[in-house]
Length: 449
Image 1 (cartoon, rainbow, N blue to C red):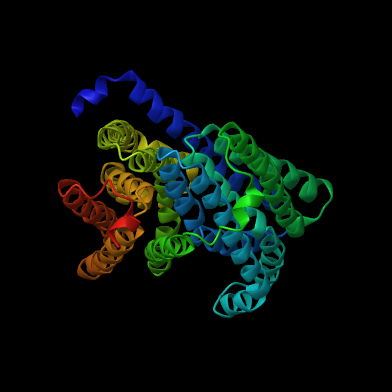
Image 2 (image 1 turned 135 degrees about the vertical axis):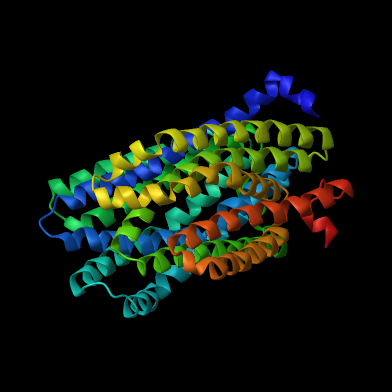
């Protein structure tokens, strides 16, 4: 199996899928920085606070619905590997229909949800006002934003990572341009920032549908109208898959939310230091996500084709490059961590505090790479039930680790986070090893139920 590392074709295949997604992911934090810079130049701080709070509400909501992309990637990759054109067409139509149904639910119920969240918020009245204003506008972009998840997943499952890359880049460039125009040019303030994001999401939808139509024609898929009559086929499997990925994502969000709120009880300097270090963690996530996406597409294709040798080659190639990237990040954080912290914050107390917990972060890439990769493997195999169960166990371990280490303050939070990452990887690794040995991993998950 290790002989696969000598195969240059394998390495080109991995990078053809991973590199575009890594590059496009870089535009995500860039967008956040531009938003902050544009709104931050207005005359009152509550404008920035309102966008930050409202944006967090929207981002968490959409992030929890990220199963639309993940499920679509796994199912479409398997259909692609099996050369099943009908299934590829059906996966896309079902995904879009589900995305728009969920967007409708969000739009209808967004007001009571916002009221409930703001009821428990301790933000000032001005921040709440502008956060609600931002949220009430951004929610109208849900049909486009959720459909774009499906489009990205379907294109990636079709072994095409360049089109999703351009979709993300163009969407974010439109968002940044409209931000500047609406906020600084037209003086629309918070409403302008929200409107810019909505316009960008619909611009992305138009571009994404055009990309899909090109891919559809190049693969000679059946006419979409003919698939509407059969779109109910396999709906049960899709809903179960999405349900399990949603529950898995909910557990993941719970751990990060707890870390943020618990860190807030330890003082302002700790909160600021954690914010700096979390930006490092996001960098790790963006880098590892690119290889996880490649794993999803390659594993799904191999399983669809029932090709054990191709599956093994995909695992070896993607794991090798993930390990190389993780080593580079760990060395960079160890050697240059203090310098990077100084670039983000020039407050001595925050720099000192962040440096205390930097060793935890330096260990994260090598520990976390396994859970990212194994997530990609199980998404490609559409085995979300195993992902859900292992995530639940890891989440319980996270809180157990924190409770046992609670006397060590913020070290307990970072230690628990590192343990959480390790348990995610270990849990899925044990399940994968068992299923690989029993020769059942190559079968689509639905065949085992």
